[in-house]
Length: 323
Image 1 (cartoon, rainbow, N blue to C red):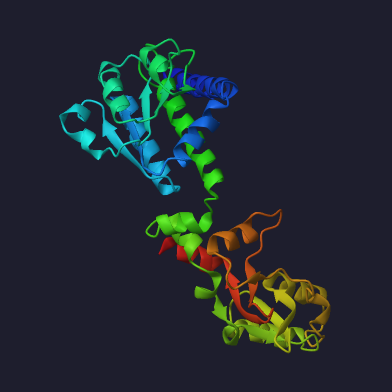
Image 2 (cartoon, rainbow, N blue to C red; image 1 turned 180 degrees about the vertical axis):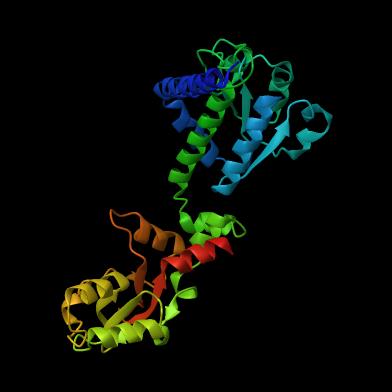
């Protein structure tokens, strides 16, 4: 195949996946709400079981559930009857994943899991299958077709099972009230966890390292102070309260618009600067600085009494992300 043919094939596969995922979204019913209630109302853990590609998808769903507040473990369908059933406590819910719904190793487990009084939730692609008939709740993972060139490789079906698992995990998060602080506690070593756990006060520049001006200071004075304290801004503070800010952009504007650098900087002071509390996470601070039509590179930081105690720069955030 030529390069162009390979590109066209790749595009068509992704487009087909997208379309079929939308079809699966149309099939979402109250069963996913019932499944989440069943899990939340059970004090035990969730056991997820699958074989082959479905087993790999199951392991990913376990990781997502554990990281978002739902205790879960993976049990390999072929190993279950060789000792792995020992992970069960009576009543632990089980999620079975199978495209056909007739996977022999899973079907063989049904009477055993019933003895364990384990509620059965199935993510399956065949609603007339054995698993569908014996499950307490069925989550519809049926697909039109697999999208590989042969139409037999678990491609679409695997992605759909994963999407349903993500949807279930998200519903559980919402019902548990799982928030960013909870996520940070579960991810102390991860990049996102660090961004959620670290507060602005831990990385900001304290106020004694920040250039401070008054509106009466000259443009030249402001330039000197910002050169001595090169953080990209100078703050106008009165009795501890933030009254204004001059950024490097403001300073350049003043220099180009005024012939005399002895003129006061006052008219270039922004008297309504955006600021953030010192207890803001660096994740949220990044959103404040970047998620706007015109990004900002510096943020004054205030304490609980609204006194200005420091300055945060976008460079500080990027540097923290790299550490």
